[in-house]
Image 1 (cartoon, helix red, strand yellow):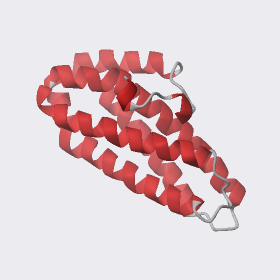
Image 2: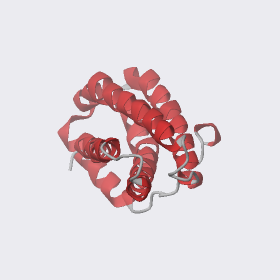
Image 3: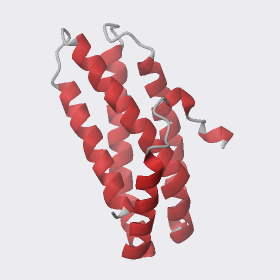
Length: 158
């Protein structure tokens, strides 16, 4: 499958989880924790895949996207940091919902920039065959990706 289609599918999966979280009430502590656990895993895997596989290939194929990619790596760093805090936070904590709201805002901004501003340039530069090859590699590597944000090296340590 096309790498950009796979990444967009990940974005849709996370957005559905965000919408589920937004529908919960303050009494739904266990449901919020369950959703956040899924969000943590999905976003940790997604960030790892993008940074290890997709971004280097995109940068090579479409050098004009370099600034966007570097910004995306920094956005990932902030997201992974928030995920690690959420992972260790009691869902009954008064800051839990607020932290999740900030995470959602950050991720939604990140997704919009990727999908609207530079995925089209990468698609044009790579073409269907290269994106399919990259998608196959992403699918093969996904099961090796860390699920714990604390296991993801920061952008500064790569």
